[in-house]
Length: 335
Image (cartoon, rainbow, N blue to C red; front, side, top):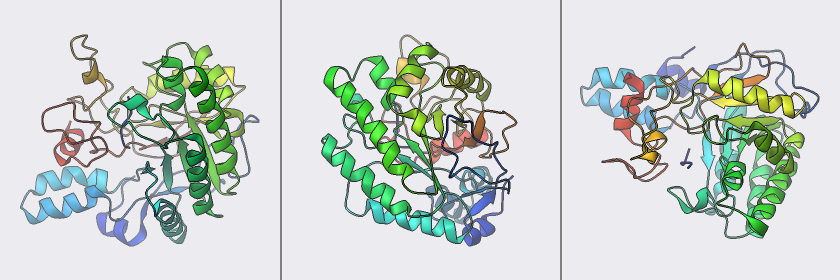
């Protein structure tokens, strides 16, 4: 059920590569403190060549000034960069990203999304062919981080799919092992903060099950967990859900994907269950990325899913998962 993945001016975006954010609270004793944000304001990196940036240029040139202005908020907001395949050069792309962000004095957000049996074969199915390949892939990604500061959201849905039962038996045990090892490998990069994904409030409602699974997957070695990746649940619902999970983990911290939760989730329709999470109509951009969340346990609101990238071919005109879809971006920006 997952898909590939204060404003600054567009000119400043291209020149500087990011927008200002604010400091996060200090980590709890259950997290790794070595790479935690300092008390100085933290700024997230914005890719100067992200699809929304080109869309603004294209629509401006075509005379679609109002549409260009609407999508400008996406173009000027920092969003995560997804690493979701093993094609040669993925580590070079990651290294270029963190190098550019470091040069701009900003923090990049990366998503590691390559676990074997990814997405249980659904719209974003794929992933590494086996455990050995995944270990090699994660090592390459971790090596690309070097000493640079970075946030890594680790394997959206991977834990929740085990709880859902679509990964079971030896494969489930292997997945827990791979996630735990991935945290160790990524945390060897001194500037990395790692958040293991924990699903969203409407998926697995039993927080005890979620907390137990996160522990089994190594969350206590990470900096915390992530919620709502590529989903639409409200920020308030995620804060409540995450706080309950945190209580069971001894005060673990978490981050929330607010990229598309401005209008909350779509209604659940038994006739079209996909419509609840796959390119639903009527959704809107959520709170801008920031570490000034006002919530003691929430390190940041992040745009983990890039607004405007499709959730899959589940709606008329929708491209495959992860592809830029300007019409949907415009919907999100104008609702």
